[in-house]
Length: 287
Image 1 (cartoon, one colour):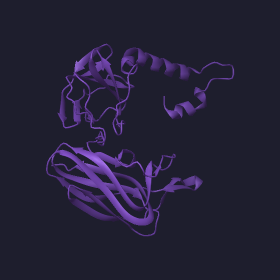
Image 2: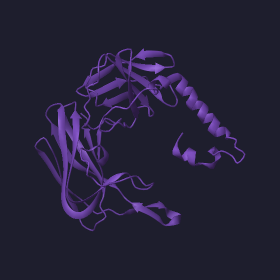
Image 3: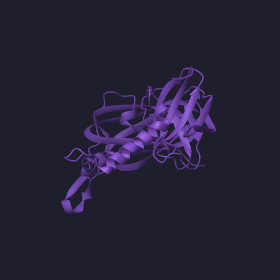
Image 4: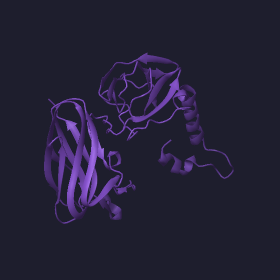
């Protein structure tokens, strides 16, 4: 049940203590799902990854019959039918799609700490589908690496960086979660590149100043320098004279990775003026 549903009065208990049908219906849906897939929730924990939140869903883990099991809870079914899991170095002995009490073995490819799983065209469950990964021993994790996006690239954000001292402004209903940067700033990310080649990098930010903000992006002895131009505000509700800050994205350039491996990508800026840092987007160029 989403937050918007909970906030809606039609889901609230009535004055006489009765519960609206809409709430009862959804609670029945949750109960039915747990009756089928509760094994992936009860007694399970999260994984100690740097950012245990993928744009398709979540991971849980537990021990079953002396084996380590990881459940991928898929909320958003990937359009290309490929589930991308980043951060597990151990090789699974089996990966299966769950459907009720039955399961179907899935094909997968693993490179370094990245697992790509071939999914069926249709998702088995309308709410949350379950993929079960089984390992013969304890998990070996790549805890700090940035998770690969469903789109096949990497969102490098303040919340999945290696830095713990950034001033992070959380989503407020208008502006996205971003880092408020001033002065000398250095942000590092750990990225696991599974394919050598050229990768484009884009930058999204809001510059509230009247002058350009210089920056530098570096990885593997390569540097890209640029400036972020001043940005404006954008209309949210025209009839209410309501405006919010505009976050603009721009192409910075191309980086080349000669071989697969783990890399540290760094953002640097030297200015006293503020910059609202949204994200960097790293993606392999299409052949």
